[in-house]
Length: 95
Image (cartoon, rainbow, N blue to C red; front, side):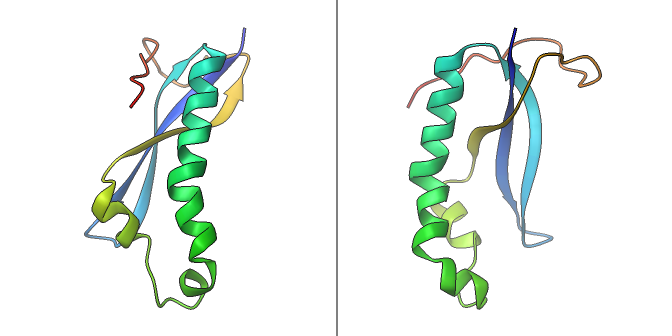
């Protein structure tokens, strides 16, 4: 069975950095696909459209998180979740 690790991306105003936190898992391929696609059309597109400005520090990821305070995605898949400490599967809400 494949376990897709669900991550939450947020902005930390104290450190002025994006925070990445693994919060749970899903076993549904359609949830994985949805979260990947949602990342690509939101933050992925923002990064692609602003790559030069982000590299030159004339733009910040903060600007993205002003309008999207929380973004969920899946970066990791595994066949074993032992050691992650997750107790239950996350129900993905499509929006």
